[in-house]
Image (cartoon, rainbow, N blue to C red; front, side):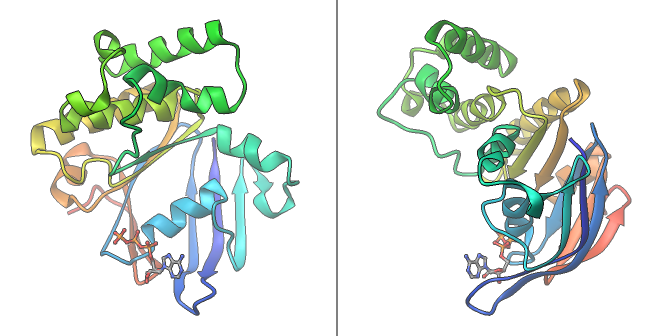
Length: 224
Ligand SMILES: Nc1ncnc2c1ncn2[C@@H]1O[C@H](COP(=O)(O)OP(=O)(O)OP(=O)(O)O)[C@@H](O)[C@H]1O
């Protein structure tokens, strides 16, 4: 998926200006990091891409299509093409690993055989195939994060967004999670990862976008 922001602004109803004049272009199949202080606008930028929030100025083009021109019906279709991973992975602890990963497919009404096949393929990619029957509570923090990643990719998204995916993991597990994102990127998925961890970001040697007070202050480089 190709993403282009053209002088995008977002002012919340509270009057808070979370983004202003943000322009950048992510090519199809590119991987980049998004950094910036707390409150810089990283989550807001991702919410605009998912159409959870709408921009108040400027244009967002996805594969050349202006998001404002999408019909109401096209919005869920758009969201299915975007996989999202959060820091607090939002797992349901009253069901198994398998059923947590199956959730997005059940929502979209796929048939059970197809669901089982796709769930196992996603669990295999994150190395958790042998844990499908476990309750997520019984797994480690790193494994729980990988369940969240399996769930994000089970729909075979063309864009993977991760908001602080390694927030509470130690350096070794963080590196493993980043390697997983790289593997998805290698097979053509566009990947954008928001992270505070500048040392980790620099080691990954990808493009770095930096927000400060809602403005894009750095685009390029490999971090510091
Ligand atoms: N729903 C909302 N209503 C009003 N203001 C909001 C809302 N969401 C975010 N903001 C404000 O917009 C600004 C950007 O917030 P955002 O969550 O995008 O930053 P962030 O870079 O992701 O921060 P963090 O790293 O702490 O998650 C902040 O000042 C925040 O308080």
